[in-house]
Length: 229
Picture 1 (cartoon, rainbow, N blue to C red):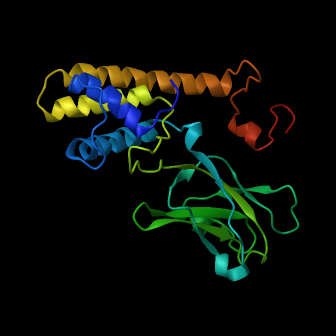
Picture 2: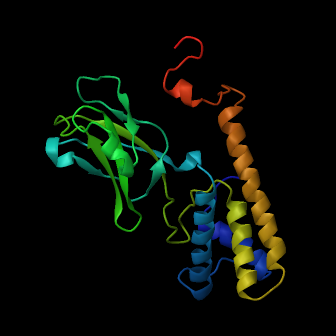
């Protein structure tokens, strides 16, 4: 199903819970409540799978020692691929190793090339490079999965590609808030849609009709060839 605006999704919701497909007044009680439920449904969608729709790449500007620690975007959730560093005369980019913060003591801080990611959602996430400082003017590519932008009005469009899932999930939220036992059936329908989206995402990525992609093993990521290395 194609993406639809919040207003259209609310028409679907109203047609089921109120038997009235008219759009609630923007800013009114129903609109505000349903918008809150829509944001909850979108967060539920975002957290259940690593969606391609939420993949982004952040290109920070390196200014020598001032960028020893790089603040990551506010919508950063987690890394989605190796981080590439273009300093030290590397033109094509070199993937640097990620090391958990509690294992830094096992690394050579003056020679080993790696990074750590620290922080939390409220205060923000940070990427710290080693060794440091990086050369001024260097660049890097930080691919990551983002959190979806909050839906603020009826004219906005969700990041979730299946608007019917959002409508179905909100219907379940509304019926549950009204102590209507039918919410359990509606929740199951929404869950089935979510599972189908996960399956479709896998098929789209690894079973494309145009260019099928094999699953890359850890050895392949490191250019390790069994029987040759």
